[in-house]
Image (cartoon, rainbow, N blue to C red):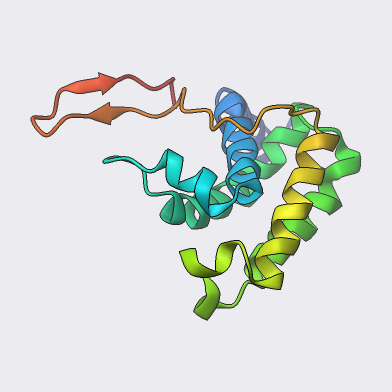
Length: 152
């Protein structure tokens, strides 16, 4: 085994240790995009802004190394790879001027993305639309840990 192959294998092993987090992030992203404004508003809290999370979770979930780790570890069947990548492209196609609460339930791009997110979740066997916060660490205003997230 060459030095480059050994380095790549070590890097993959490091990412593999966090595959549950990457998978949860991808599923959470799909869940957020599957929700209406009423459902998203129920998630809003002092440490959680659903509109910000819509944008940031999708980008992180589809970071190449995280996305590939999910497939390499067979958390999602490879047959869904292209469909998931198409979903990401659809979210990228939401115009910046409609990336706002008032459009989520009414704009055709948002409606199409919500429909596709629900279809993907069904194909993945995800029956709930409950956001998984197991990996989130929440601190109070004094810096004390109120909720300890999983290992990241």
